[in-house]
Image (cartoon, rainbow, N blue to C red; front, side, top):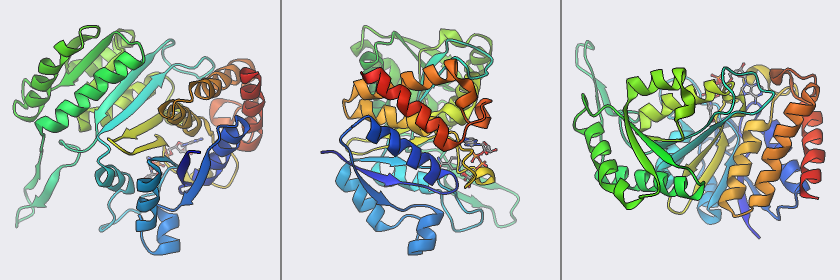
Length: 339
Ligand SMILES: NC(=O)c1ccc[n+]([C@@H]2O[C@H](COP(=O)([O-])OP(=O)(O)OC[C@H]3O[C@@H](n4cnc5c(N)ncnc54)[C@H](O)[C@@H]3O)[C@@H](O)[C@H]2O)c1
């Protein structure tokens, strides 16, 4: 039996995690759960935002499902999400943006996966410091050939597994000739090994415009850390925002699945939280565990309920339901799908 490390998270985290576990149990996924703390809950319970017992649990189980974590504002607190990525070398951040009928959005029929490098590059801005007079700020961009190659190979592998046709390599090699140039160079070297996937190159500023003007031209986007951080939110915006956006952080041995949104402290404890992003993340996790019939049941139930019974969804989706009642409707629909 597969054991999952479960981080309930802060704010709305426990509510959407409880909803997600109810759905997984109703689908009889045969999963065992090990509950561990991170974020503010861990700081209160263990005096540490990321206790070693949490790291050991994830190391042992290889798969974690994570609720959103609040990062305290102020000096001395580094993001727990960034710490997890670094600790487990979770080099690929995978963010699908998929149109769901019933979700208000600018476009329909969007299906784009952004594969973002997750461990190096400008996003990490290593060695940040100021000059003595405080007038100049410094940071380093580090890119490695190894980091580029494993990410680009992951993106091509994902494209093949998900029967996609095209990868767009997004870069700024015309200006950042060293780091972005290396990323593009590695992509050009690797691409011929995957003749069934067409590779296209696009400079990041043009990619932003093209995504807004004609998003249907995109299939899989592969890019560096900071560009991927921004482009994946842009893609989420094309399909109605972060409320339905899952994300996976994948390494050689460990994978952590999460909702892209934050801990939503403004609605925590009010049963207003929409569980769909974490549910979709759990569907990606079930794919990772080779339980495709269960993952498809979750995705299909979400599409069905949003299309046929929008009044049963949570208020952010225009419905009048609570987290619990929406979850019960989804469970009934999931069970029908599997029959
Ligand atoms: N992956 C993560 O753990 C993660 C990601 C982003 C932000 N955060 C943290 O979350 C905290 C709050 O951040 P924020 O307010 O900028 O962003 P947020 O995503 O928590 O909330 C933004 C808005 O979206 C709404 N919202 C978010 N998720 C929702 C859901 N599932 N259902 C209904 N409404 C939802 C909120 O009510 C709020 O109005 C911060 O401490 C931030 O550091 C964590």
